[in-house]
Image (cartoon, rainbow, N blue to C red):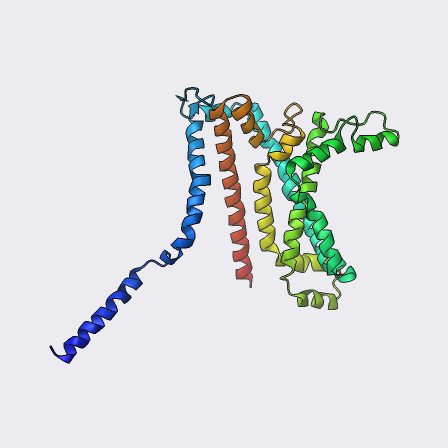
Length: 322
């Protein structure tokens, strides 16, 4: 066997593993990191979702009761269910209370804490105020609900006691009157939610180049002009994150409604998640409750996709503008 033949065989033996390595998909090395998350997703979300879809195609009272396949009848009945449509109309109020108002107020508060109070009183003062705003977020929903039930109680609540002390003889029943129940719940939700955008926006402002503010100040720009021209454009990605996460939370809100009003009075604070709960457990209409939750899931997915597409287009326009 010649030396040339030996060298050719050695080169072939060396090239074979290289070819195998080149043929290996690029995502294979990530499998050890992806598999645990995929298993968790399937176990916690995938399987329950498939089961919920299956239940929605049946008439079932739960437990050991027989299941009767009825196809899409539960979904057809939703079209004529006035309470179902009322619950989704009330979700608009939840979005206002948990997305629109907290995002706007949180944006202004974060800018003030970062750009004004932080410079005038020091970063420690701003950090204390930030923690104060975030405190309602870490309170358990039941604790916050009981607290506000005490405050808004028609007979002994702090609000009505104050109103009586200033001469109001017949103060409102804040959580028991259909005219005031929804505004009262919205106020509580704003109080609970406002700390989240404040913390996110203040963190976002940490990455903004201070030289931008210094240059604007040298040009004579006041706080409001700096806020519009620098702060809002620079933290646009975080704004989309806040809007997306808060919108999803608003659409599936359950705890505050359960603790404060149980969907009442007269359905004035009924939301889809609580209406699904009522059918699941109070009315023993498992299939109907599953259909409501599936429609809610679909709505959340559509809204999330719309927000993500809007974010992608905004980023693309920004890149093209640059």
